[in-house]
Length: 237
Ligand SMILES: [Zn+2]
Image (cartoon, rainbow, N blue to C red):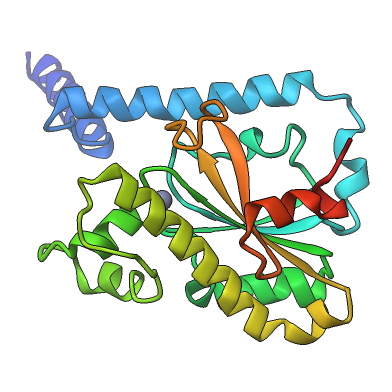
């Protein structure tokens, strides 16, 4: 009988020990399930991506990169590289932040322009940009870290519920960022080594060109759309 009690005690201790070693059960099971689904989505997407590639696909990337452009975009989830480059691997030196700003990503952009020597620097904003709207309406509840990253966004008004004014502010911000980059890279632009292009990814169809179009609004400081359309670098016909 004593021997049986001892075995039961050992089993109890063993089980207790293994329970302690396990990750504690989640407090909120639905949140845990949600995270699991998100991780699954990313892992499965990556799996699908890998399976579609030829075996030697990354051989070309093993010894460095030679991107065709440095591209600054807003971090917004509605704007992604697949909308701007069907095969972005190796093409785009991509820098993302809220409001597609130059000064808050100065080092990354400089690496693309001056070390990777990309001949083009794109600065791409987008319709209904939350960072631009925040710079317009200045909501009091934002954290200091976010405020600091709104500092160099340039808007034209404070009516963030007025879509026409938001559109104008998105353009104003892209133009301001291009202007900031033009000052920094004046020598490269003057020598013809760099072209700085500002654009708006228009998923609201604000420009009546179809939802999801990239609208070029600034080339090296030229903001007249008629003049831009005449430029050989954007005239593909
Ligand atoms: Zn945005």
